Length: 502
Image (cartoon, one colour):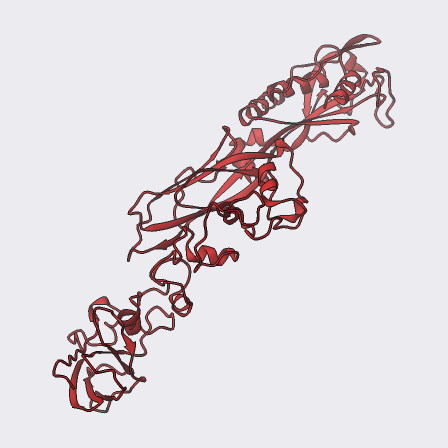
């Protein structure tokens, strides 16, 4: 045996993982060489009195290569707190050899890897089960060829290991070209990740339409329920998602919103979201090489057009603090009950149980905001909420108890919600801008507080319904018709005009 044989024995008490296993005054376990003879080294480790776990010896031939390996089975201390072990491995000591001894049982982070092995052999953290914060525990990464427990993106393709594994359509040990389109479905690899589709299958949801075509037309390439049909342009909005690391640059973040996800570094990615839905959005740490990650990022969720996205918190998204994102659908519907459905005849119509001398039809409306959970935040007023998502009509006061023959005259008006007295022959629904809908609600609130005069010829249910439509940004036809004793805007003509609209 060469005289250059070096023997060291110590534990890293200062990192904290061993502080409970050893007394505060012990900073190392001493290793002594009891005997060196051909092919063997007899080592003896002195253990502190407070130490009761088993230990194991580690050995390496070169400190430069950091190739530490477990050299012994777990060994219990002697009654006098000493452990003797004979290294009789063939050829290990042909040059120099280095030894350490460590606690074989203490596992502070519960990842099934003893703390000593994490520090001495692997360089992983004994205090957390996922050293690189990529969502894959160290034990899995150490057992999987190609994965690196100290690198959140083992293959270096830009997608963290945990994200690739959660996706299930990529191998975190194989470098992927993010701009590639191997399946030829017109959707590049990175967007396949964002949508959760399969980059090796052209039609991931099996609805008969390629993934890239679905994204372009606004349907969901991962949802067969839409049958690959392009939604109406009134049913979706474009939303820009971006996420930037503004800290040390050692962190990887992912922004998740509904079924979509983007990684930090992606700025202004535009996606289409269905109106009338509530989504949960959150930013999570997907990887870091730092001991203590710097959770500094800027996440933005913005409608490409104004007033299309509302969030439950106006503050910047914070790690592990999801926010609700509302993609509202605002609508105005107009309902028409014609005296004689399908033509413009204005004539009397007798309705049983209701003493009505003259009936020229009826018109009413509804203002809507979806999803329902969003309404309270949207209206910010109990008065507005009374007339939202409910049918509303304009009537002469006293309806339906009074004899409505007086409706041929000017009389006090009244607003009814919900509208329950008539059934519609014609219904038209229109998309409405946020501010316009607020203005229309305020108009109805004021009308309810001071209805003014109902006049069958000058200010009737159709007139008011068209006023509400105009406040919602839709100027609808207003054809004048006449009847015995008067004339004006009426449901017979309005119904036919609406039928003729696309």
